[in-house]
Length: 488
Figure 1: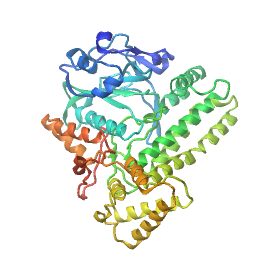
Figure 2: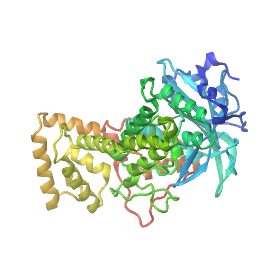
Figure 3: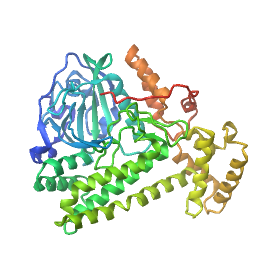
Figure 4: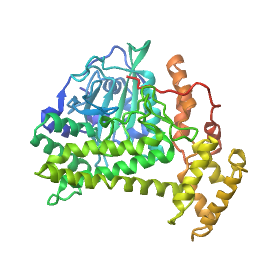
């Protein structure tokens, strides 16, 4: 075991105090020759960890799963989920929760190793992960954090010195993932399907204590839990839509109670604006297309609500009615968040009834003209529309006049509107071709400089600095659609 005092580990294991139906204690699966590839110094400091110690041989041994810190209780979590609409038993098949870091500011974060080896939930899998997908998760999750979107984060990636077999032989790697928790909709589905009422209640009480401590004990606290999760998910998916993020695999086991983005597999950011955009190679029916994401979150929330019905009321019909009433508020919560975000992207501070029509008209033109989503709003921010194919069309000229008149009707100055737009429209996103270039040079050539530069640029997406300009360029459209893969 590594020495807690020297490395800064201050671990608790509250999840392990739940009924043992929710997890299995596991032992580390050592690897041959781990090597630290990338380390998140800023995140380490915020967690109260000693960055220098963790980059030593002792720290790398923890990231590789060869050793565990003092007070760690390694375990794999059990859960279930609807995968592309079909319910199945799941669990952490290639991940190990080593504990919960208590930070100097009093926060609590799960520390999980992803790709650390087989667990009782691995089924036919080897429990390992390839370097490329782990680096992809590092890049995208840190970009999402910089964009201000709730997300799990990445502390480190180590290579294992071992190869794994997928379609080809690939270098193995382990990602150290940090999250407020790994409680999933699927954790509750598992409890409702295979646990007792007491175990379900224990899980719900744990979720409330950990994520929603303000919920009153004397009221219907489980209805309040459902309502709070609905609100967080409504906010989260609105934030996804506002930056053009496509999760790619929105199964119920990939949705968190905390409202964080988690499980970055076939995710990507949309370039050309098209609500039908799908990147995931396995999403052949476009279930998780960009435009479907809000509805899918609503569907997933319904599955979560079903798992709580016995806690909502002793009478099933009454409990189901409470759940339905709570779920009926999701579309309004989502739309209010999305509309407020779109107003900000256009420099609008107050509310007018015509705003929705103004926004819808712009998006319709963007889809028809097949323009870049991020760069169109960037062009509106800096009045560089002459570079867009939208510029000069009669429909856009008419829209622009309406937009300018709308800005003139608010009390805030044009300068304040411009600042609001700067703060709401990123200069850069993780462009697919940039991410692929970084991964190729890292995995194929062992050169991490391209990835490090990309991460640096993505760390301040609202800076709108000159050096970001080259990272805002798009690739010419190809006859071959861009595909992403789960990387399991």
